[in-house]
Length: 277
Image 1 (cartoon, rainbow, N blue to C red):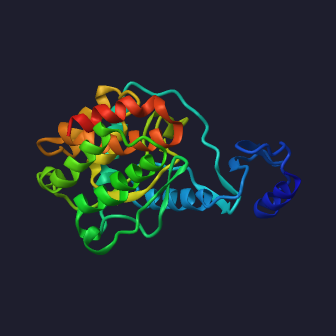
Image 2: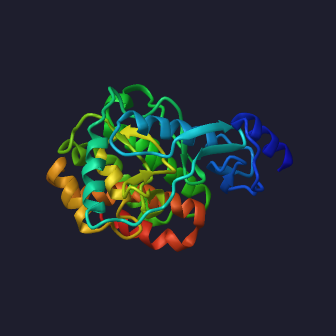
């Protein structure tokens, strides 16, 4: 830790007066505060920094500003917490829709990154860059399913569901063809903050360009955001008919990922979503 502290002091050109203990707030002699993630060598730090920088390009929602990143740490501004106002979720939903208005020419991203502890494949192969169904099935569902197979979770219900999805996914997604939107990629209640100005600030992204329904589905994986969020989103950028059914397919990606990370506690939900295909 002493070596990391010295490196950070060189980056900041300031003395750190709080000890550096992995993830948490650090404070300098001048009183400035920062947020540090560290602990082990990993490419996750650089990927997260690149994702935050990409989200900032849309000028739709504030993101944690990256100060420095290396192979073993990520240093960002420290977001002082505030109290959500009565219109917080309405404003959040409207601005999140505006984030999704930021488009790219192709699906995916210029680098692979991470979804939790697992790799997230973003570099499209062949026609996937222009084919959302192909990209999502191969780089999201099939990748997680193969991982689940290796871990012994390839139950008959899951195998059957994945097989049906492979046959039907082109038709299912055809009704919602849209240009690739900038996605946070992992938006749940733990991956945004309310700052002292009452704004939602995005943190911990798993960025790529894809269908915006995938982002909204993630907000419903661990409970849901308040209704005002979705009402404001739909008013700003309405979803196309059939989004409720497609949401289950997008949620399947995240449930399979959690199955692969955390194990059996997510197996029944994975089977349920597969049975609904």
